[in-house]
Length: 312
Ligand code: ACM
Ligand code: ZN
Image (cartoon, rainbow, N blue to C red):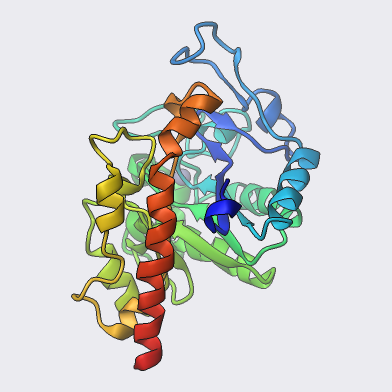
């Protein structure tokens, strides 16, 4: 269906707090226990809701997509949204006790070398499965309270001459980006990666309607941007909140950006967070017909953007 509508990238959000969905040989507990949620939000029975993709299945999907000219971008969300990892391996978080904080879950501890080692090991296996240039680090919604209290985080901040926990997040993201680049990959992150200092080369995926400065800031800095503001591009929201009309009318090349900035808008994306989508038919219902408007927007508005850059 994506190929039929000229959608050429599949962004695969493979990990989150509630479930780790990709087999990693070095860390079997990520899927043995990390793939199955213990709360009962959807399932009824504790521990029964979940599942994961084997490496074989991932390769099959990448291959299936490739035959249809669709690239797959894997996302392993870090340093936040990874309770499914840190609850199953010791030494990845600031403190032994992990769970939900004020708003989000306890993050990885960027002060511990072992936690960074874990991230690199996981990504080495992920990269081997995905032959494309882009990888997605996540980087969204990190609750940094633990980092303020953690001796390892504070030591890292001091040693690296960082101003505080925002810069610690950037330091972690930049470390990972260096690792990706050394493997010939380019990094995408949710637009929180701007906070605390954006590297010159990362691509920013703008999702936060309430942080509209992310796009002008990133493009002025010379970084590429992919649009996916939650309204209207989170198709897990119903049509009252994110309508077909809003998708069609969205301006991906606002006049407030210069032609040079507009040339950095490289794509638009719709997200379907499957948390509240219990069936395939419901999934299709949420995608269609809005996905048609998304495809048309992408191939009209963005063509105009690159024309403008050529004219310049
Ligand atoms: C996101 O929706 N937290 C990227
Ligand atoms: Zn820490």
